[in-house]
Image (cartoon, rainbow, N blue to C red; front, top):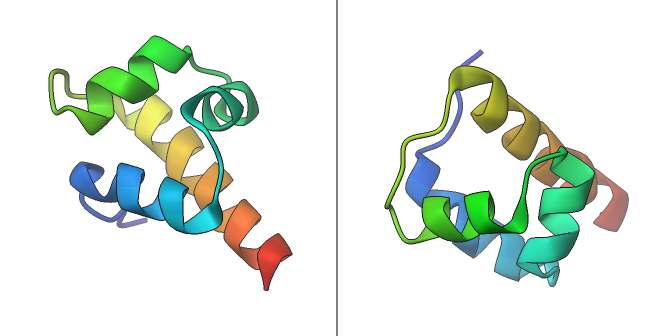
Length: 64
């Protein structure tokens, strides 16, 4: 599975109209992890990136 660039997390989250805290809870990561990823301060593990992108994708499908 190929995921989008990590730098797209913030734009995708904002497009869905959700806060960092909500994405974090749904993805089972901390809010500070989401903030650090969005500011490009850390590189996530594959499993963390996968959970975040799958969560964003699921939310996008629900919104459609």
